[in-house]
Image (cartoon, one colour):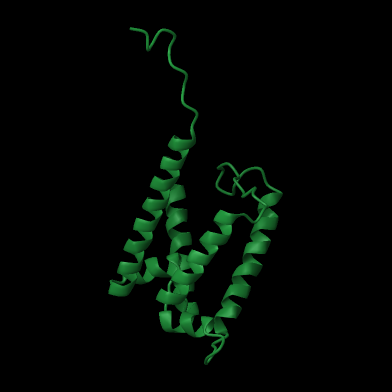
Length: 155
């Protein structure tokens, strides 16, 4: 139960941070992304702060074998830039630029009932489900076929 309370409080803090920083305002996000127009650099400071906090958190996490609440410490291990990473990053950036939302802020704004954010979250969920289905299909189609049992085609 303690983990659920901590999860809720951390999520609440994250959501409040998104609201206070302006990350939930699509116009502000698109103003940040429009480097050839009236560019709004304020979100660069938000991202810089997030990177600084994340860098410190990862440095601490790398020295630990157990998470702060006692669970297993699972850190990312991939270090190469591959096609799925590049394509996923491009899709994320295109969605962020077109809609003005990324997943966290979209959830915050959708919870407030904003129709554009609700549509974005639904589209995001459909995309995630489609990706999982494609991955499952890919694993099944690339799995080796077991050999036929001896005498199985003899008549």
